[in-house]
Length: 124
Image (cartoon, rainbow, N blue to C red; front, side, top):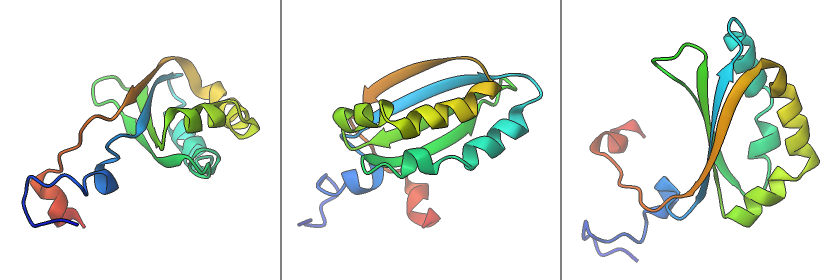
């Protein structure tokens, strides 16, 4: 129950995934295949977002490097992500995207805090 006090943090997790297990994948796409990659990614997200532990997934394109993308996904916890990571759905998803990928990196992290900005109240 919130008391209207702006310092009450009890509702933060619902919008910012505070406490979630986050995965960040940096992908360098083979030059000239960016549009095809975006189409393939959009067409195969169900393999990730359909997993019961997945909270959501985002695709972002680097503004400085033409062929660099970042895929971020949030998970209820690390065991849920690891279960997905070893699944047939994940292996098939990875194979669909592999032809576009030159190289990349992979990082995992725990979301410690999320502070919503003023503009987000107007975005809804």
